Image (cartoon, rainbow, N blue to C red):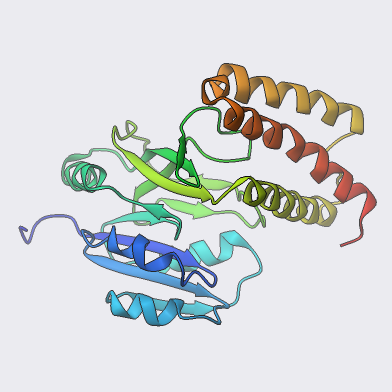
Amino acid sequence: MSGDAPRLSALVVVHNEEARLAACLDHLRFADELVVVLDRCSDRSGAIALEYGARLIEGAWEREGGRRNAGIAACTGDWILEADADEHVPPALAEEIRTVIATSRFDWHEILVDNYIGSRRVRHGWGASFGKAAYPGLFRRGVKHWGDERLHPALTWRGRKGPMLRQRLNHYVDRNISDMIRRLDSYSTARARDLRERGETWGSTLANLRRMVSRFFKCYVRRGGWREGGYGFLVATCAALYPMLSHLKAKLEKE
């Protein structure tokens, strides 16, 4: 590699991910630097990261944005690729990333995602705060900042957005349907806490009934969830339930 080529940092933020971290890092060997943020880890995540030559950032963060910002600040590359422990970068995407950072006139790019439930690829129907069909994961150092929310923090950008990458990231989001339901419970609980802190309940129950209908339609019809059979129906149902559950938890629970 030429000495003039941009350096790439790969950033992974984890909490007790010893079962999945090695496979994730194995797919990030093409990066010039690996940075792993260990958020209150009590398992072998740190030891596994060291085996791959990663630089470790250890701490305890209550909110997603804080730990991600800490990781971004620790990266020294010209470009940063954010990935999670349940995500793999296939060789074709790795090659495209290298080409993009060497030639791009822009400051950040979105990456398409193939989501898996167990061994089943579910490409269509994701979104509405319950899964991602794409994410802004490749960016120059200094242009991306996460907000302070517990779940799905807002993003602040500097610079120009470039075209979406063509190759896809593999995201092993849920092991099975039970995992999907547990994730829905976790997401809605975190969202409810953010709402309570701001003195909100995300509108009225009637407004959230309307959200349920519109989100189901968006995921199942407009985003093609119907193509995925029962899995697409499940994804759309979870996306529809998310705002209502968050609203009711914020309204009826105290913590």
